Image (cartoon, rainbow, N blue to C red):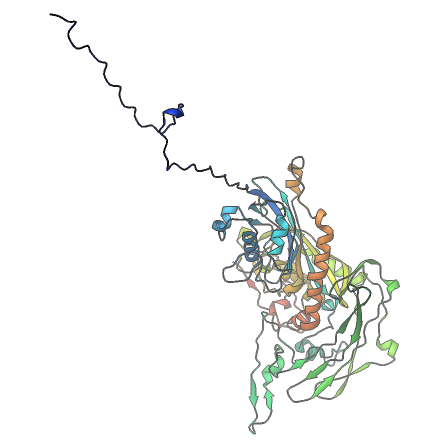
Length: 554
């Protein structure tokens, strides 16, 4: 067989390459396509990291329903969360979900209570620079952000806070037993050596403080002839709030502050104070006017610490205790003062000057010292039983050594330091201490109220004078002093003092001048509203009173 003439064998065709997502190194083998469009790579969006920080802030509590978030109510935390969202501190997805950004607060202030050294913590987007300015731009002037500091990942503003310091500003006249007495006390003093005159500033019928004990009976009965409405006899013994409906209108005797702006310096404000006579208009059409001599305290008799003039014209001065300041008394005038009652008759009012001197200061500090130490404060709060371990609280110190003058009113600075406080605890402690100073309650009642097996109804002082001064992180600062900044208010001291004088102190003084919150509360501080105040011990009671039924917890 001739193989030479046979057809030579051809190699098999090469196999088709499988499609691959990877590109070939040899670009020449790729067929060119006219519809191929090159898309440039998109730039990766840079995302900031969240940082764990502690934010220092202050706020004036007027108009707010407290610090803690409460759905449907205006709160400090609600405004803070909204500002954090608008300033980029938290994402929109995390809004309304505090656990997702590890939110915590150092102190939970009540309704109307202010703060100067509040601290909150969480994980926030603090970059780019300018976080404080962005946050402040989305807040009202009532809330001031001082700054923030980086903290450890495990930091919690509530758990790591060792102590809290609160201050309560109580007017000096609140400790005077003869100042703003209630009608019950006035009637009981008739014919005695210490006869009291009814309060002309608030009127005998008075005005009721909303929220305190006692009935509010403002109903009136109309005479048969249909003429003027005659107040009910029960309404004469009760207080009611003056409003703009034609009912009793009372104008307090208070300094009228006038402002004058200098043409040379628009920022310079001079204050001129004049005294306005109060006009009391009753239902029967009788108009009563009354002028009281202003107290004059020589400058040389006061040891001043500092004076601050706020932007709104209120003059604020700190001072130690004034000893024997001069005032207009019976001895200087030579005869007792004559005042005109609402019935048109002239009566003699016995004036006894009261000053927060060394003697009164020692007594008040002795009363406040009963609260120091570890006690069961179940009588000084609400919704906490005596058996509850949370009723045990430790008070480090409670003193009242300094007086501050704001807007012409002298206030005593009651400073209390403790590990933590319960709802209304400080206000009730101040309320009972004031009752003891005014001789409405015995000093032994404080020790009884701190007992676990006794339940007593304790008066609550108004919230307007209370504010959180500072939160302390002593243990945290000691542990992390080498790696982290100390958490304190030293860097913001000047800014905090300015905010305190401008927003908080002036609000406290103006509220007392316009509404007389403390003065009206003093009228309700009596045995009729608080019968437990008669309790003085196991075997004794107050004079001319019946033994109160103090409930014992079994």
